[in-house]
Image (tube, rainbow, N blue to C red; front, top):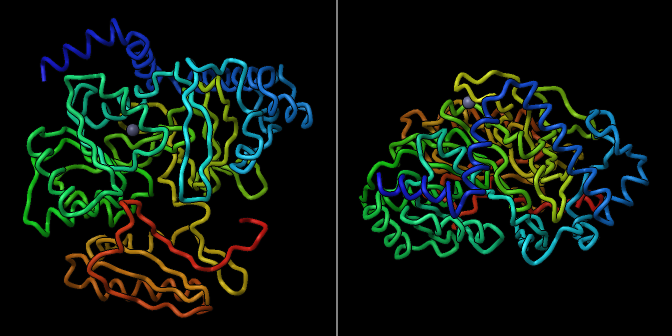
Length: 447
Ligand SMILES: [Zn+2]
């Protein structure tokens, strides 16, 4: 890898100087004393909000309407006057978010997809060398920017441009597989490519990584052990992590990113919470009343992109849930931490009584990770639940599974029947894991 490292170093000092400088800055920021980091974040947040207020129609109107004082935005109380931005608003008022700095050169159109309705069009700031966020977390896993990588996902949306940028970092080799095209022959080709290039990192959707693990096992194939496996696009349950670590023989790390605002947080070597990229994103966790919740309490994740000046995204509700972890990480990175996002806010089991259950269900088998490989909860239109389980290797697995299901029955006070269904594999979903499939119609007000 010496050639690749040298090429990277030269490029990051010359052609790619902006990326190189940005990367250096991220490496410095992640070790700043906490107060200095938060001061940097507050000043960047105030800066992007002031900019948005003077250069976009939407924020100019909204801030005026809510009496936001632009001179005091470093103050948390003032910051919280900015209304939370909903996906529907970005969709309806789309042009209103485009700033006066947006040009063909500075803006890159991104379209976010699928899982929660119609695609959303927005713009990313092409001047931000955002890929350096990925290098930051790769380094936490012992993977360097010049190492070979393999990736599985859906590449139809905005992310593809970032990846094209990545290809220009040759001579590092990068292999891609579209998770939607997963079948025996594409997985076979992907396997051969991995054997040939020996990537240091395999990164992909949780579901896709699980499907590929099943494929390797079924075909009796092995791969050269990568230094790290990273998953994204769905929360990594303890069961899934154990399964992946067993098959790939290497630590599995969780990363948190979205298509509206790409890299936001990632696990470090400790694999015990995700460090928020607090120097470039502000993540807030809000309760049902819209106020920040105390550390440890689960709430809605609301994110501000501190760097996007072409289509500012300020206090955007991404649709995921999480909680703040108040802890100093032994790894030495001072970036604050959140716990693994616990699923889309729409991943909710609704009961006939009107009760809603989300928090904790996805961890129902966490006490016995060897008992369950993967599972999925299916709620039919009549509210009844089916829990599909792919058995793990634990000889007493079925006993543990039965007792975990009994606990859920108690938790929902037997309001609806729960059936347990053992399956060999979960239905193919193009690698996009769905922990919950619900056929219950959501009440109109929160649709
Ligand atoms: Zn850490």
